Length: 138
Image 1 (cartoon, rainbow, N blue to C red):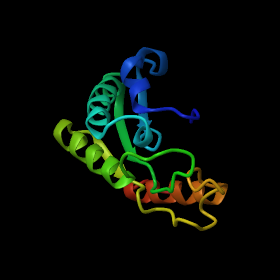
Image 2 (cartoon, rainbow, N blue to C red; image 1 turned 90 degrees about the vertical axis):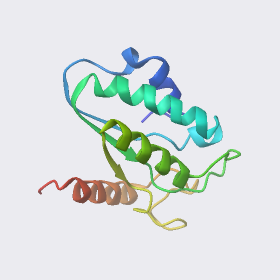
Image 3 (cartoon, rainbow, N blue to C red; image 1 turned 180 degrees about the horizontal axis):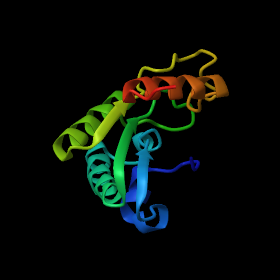
């Protein structure tokens, strides 16, 4: 991940971030967007960015980030609203979508002190949840 990265950046310059011919591209964005743009703008950026990503790979996997408690910014909407937008966009366009919204527990060892970024243990829990949802074998 890139600190502060948003769906807008992928939407505006997909060629800077996406190569051609990937087997799988996984996009998990939305946390930073929730403090920087309106939910309508997020939807528009998501549509553009995910269309660009889908055109570059065989399999696009869109993931809703885990719920968090932003402590460093004014939040305009919550991760449940990000999840709703991503669910709708993926259903409309036929993209594979998984949610990690409730995979981690707030105010636990799943998160670093900022309550945004997962710890190593939290990251492992995210992977296990995603792997299960995707039906991937060990």
